Length: 168
Image (cartoon, rainbow, N blue to C red; front, side, top):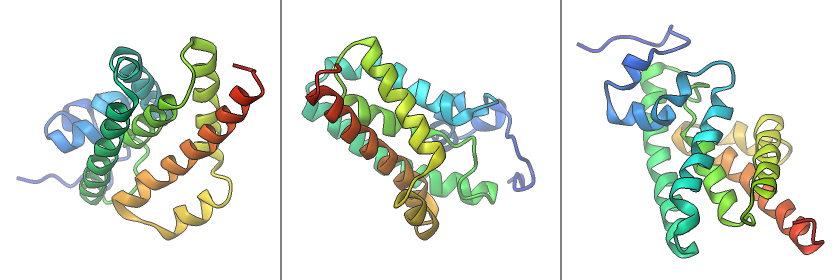
C-alpha cells in the first residue's frame, strides 16, 4: 500500500528509511533534521569528504562525484514525485554532492574547507543569476541537482582566486 505524503511537510525518519532512494535523497536521514536540512546535507558531504574523499586520487573523487550527481537526479525525481514536491527541503543529497565537488578543488585544511562550506551555503541559499534563472527553467531531479552544481562552480572559482592570491 502506497501512502500519500504529498501533504506532509516533514517526512519521518522511519518513512525515509523505508526505501533506498529516499535514504539517498534525504542524505542518509540528515534531511529530516530541522532547521536547515540543506546545511545538514552540506555537513554530510563534508563529512564524507573527510572520511573518504580526501584520500582518493582527484580523478576517482570526481568520478564518485559525477556518479553521485547522476544518482541524485534519479532519486530526486523519484522522491520528489512521490512527495508531490519536486524540490522538497528535506531532499539534501544535492548539497552533499555539490560540496563534495567543491572540496575536490579546495586546499586541504580546516579553514579553507570551512570557507568553501560557508561560500557554498551562501550561493546555494541566495541563488544569484544565472543560478536563479536556470533554477526556474529546469525542473525535476536534474533541476534539483543543477542549482547546487552551479553554486559549487561559483565557489570553485572563488576558491581558485583565493589560492591564487595566496589567502590559502
